[in-house]
Length: 128
Image 1: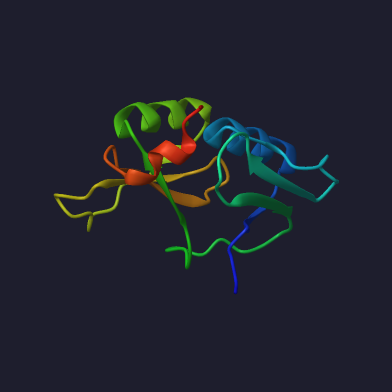
Image 2 (image 1 turned 180 degrees about the vertical axis):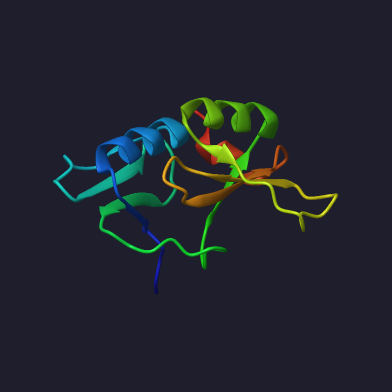
C-alpha cells in the first residue's frame, strides 16, 4: 500500500519560503532545516507534509502539478495569503462558477484556494 506523506516544492530562498508555507498552512518544521532542505508538518492535523528543496529549477507555466488548499472562508484566506506575500493569478479561461482562486507563493509556485466550507473532513483539522 502507498500513501502520500510529503509533497516537495522546489524553492530558491529556503528560509523565506519556509516562513511563508509555515504561516500559510500553520505547519512547523518536522526536524531542523538544513541548508537546502526542510520538511514542514501540520501542527495538529493529519495531512501531508510539505518538503522544501532549495534547488534551481526552471519555472514552467502552466505547472504540471499544483496544490489544492481547501478553505472554510475562501475570501478571508485569499486576503490572508496575499498579506503573507502570495499573489492572485488571473486566468482568462477561469469558469464563471469556479470554486477556486489561483494563487502563487512569493516565488511563483502555484496553488488553488478552493471554497469548501461544507467539506466533511474539516472535523479532522479542528482542535479537540
